[in-house]
Image (tube, rainbow, N blue to C red; front, side, top):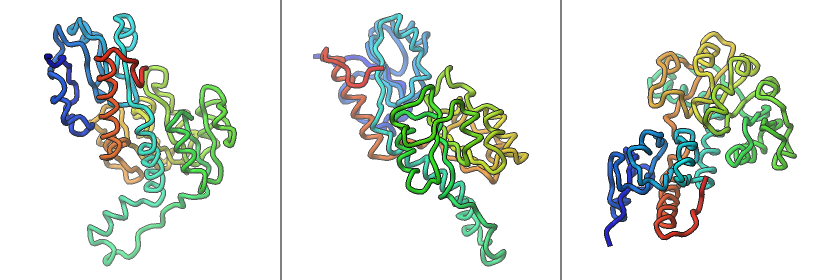
Length: 302
């Protein structure tokens, strides 16, 4: 039995638990007739790709977010879409808390201070900020937002959140009816909403300024959610205190102005980047593909 053809959109499949996908499928680098399934790690599948692959019937994403897939075009063509929820929740939540602590305690800056031999010459560096005992606002209380809140609760002064509506899962936290209201209340604002047009620019200049010169912004969601130029300007002139960022507006390109700032911690989109989680993500992609080709129900359809 011939192997079914597959459109492969991942530049480095080994980083997404899919190093051996070629053992199961006949891979193609570009869309073409005859391809019935596509895999993407986040680059997405647009309407033009679907047009060039007229037999496409499934898109298997090895990510949670599907903001880079033209979902409307897929629906119109009857193309099923799957993603990899849940398996990366813990790692992304861990990174959010890690970034918050790293920013408050200036861990990367202090690491450089030691490595550059400045400690014997200059004495101890300037004091950092306490990470515990602060009001932590979670913007978006989905799976990842809930995991972040659970991790933060033991050492936070209080947890608050914003969602489009109050959630039963947030009954132990204070609800705020807008991102700006949450930012005004919070010492730390952690962005955990999904990407896409509905949330583009949700963390606006007004939200950033409401967080204020003593506030910290943590983003492990999507770069599009934050008004990046407004954030950089606020970090530069002191209207925003600090930031910890795993995602950026035009990845992998990060603005030089942001790189030069000492009050930020920058990470190259590593939320799910552990061996354990990437293996689980890859397996879920393979399981969804196997279900599709065998005519069974998809495990994690969108």
